[in-house]
Length: 504
Image (cartoon, rainbow, N blue to C red; front, side, top):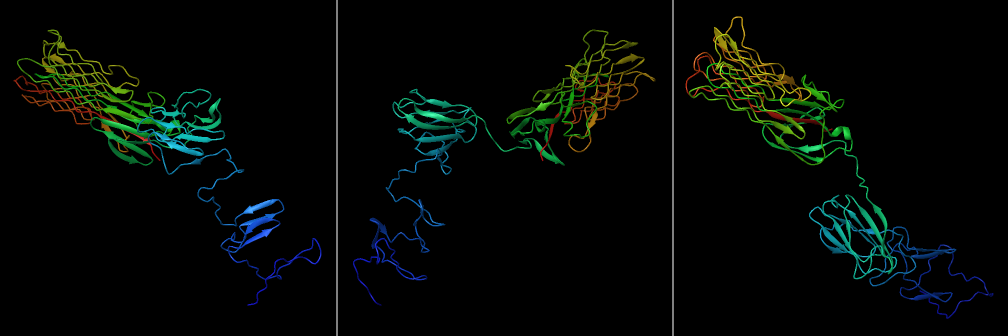
């Protein structure tokens, strides 16, 4: 290899051009050897891995690095002249959950779901910038406190600041010692993606096409974890049925009334086949938000127990979902309130039937009102009355769909049938609920109303049949001649709560 050593290469004329190499040649300088161009020291080590220039100039534009390169400052080095662009570097890998000190040029996600805490600002100098945002949308519950360093100010005041708005985000820039940190951006709007449908849990969960059904056969909680951003999808379909009333005790006592029956449907989004008692939204509409809703499912009332005289039954217990309450069914009469007037049943969702206890031959006893307290649409019907004309019979309990039957002939002496319940397909299948209990008589027992009403006992010392569990039926009367100690009227059946909504 030939070697040429010279101190200077100059053009043949002043201001001429010196050419090193021909087209296609490679001219290299030993690594580490500095090269001086027009008095500026250039390092021949500034080369990209592919041989391209790290520093290049075209006119007044100087380019650092080549395509695909990363340009960084050495450890301990600093930059001037470039400045920030008014943005921050968001610390996505470090979500803050407790008190911390912020650093200039950084943005933070603050998670206060576990409790309030503080963001301490650093010692500020002109141009410093810091941002923070509500990570879990909980600032309204657990505040984030902003605290300045020492005697420095926030917005011209030496005090702390509490961020207390859900979804809030703010950006502070340090201006000078007079105003300190100024808030240059404050967003109190919580921009989220669309949530098309409600998300919820609780009870026994099933689906029917695009609709989800939650069935509660006992007390529980319906928990909405996310409400829809489409308001109409937050309206629930529901069926709230209370416990049925118990029948009275004694010879031809009154039957129990069905538990109150209330139903809602979110039309036109949902058009399931409902009962005649349905309230279509917006009437009696239940609109949910993200929270827990306690559910009460009413139990059936106990039947009266005979002991040296008649005994009334016990009202059923109410069922509830949010603003919807259904009243328990009225008890059947087994003990007269006034001699000679018969044993009146009690009012309730549906009224209890009257009994003959205390009636004389030729008398007709009282009955009891349903839909108590009143709702619109009605939650139930009145019970039937008793009759003592040569032969005798007791009144049937009222049902959700019909009044309880009266104990009248021909022939006399037959008890009244229980009032019919109503059918609904809120779960996807047709089910009838809310039947009243059947009345007893000299000519034989009467059936309970369709939808869980208990039948009357047969002639003799036979107890009444209880209403069906979770159908809210009234208890059936004890049979003719059931005046022996311990003979009981049928108990009411427990209620149910069903919630339905579009989930996809």
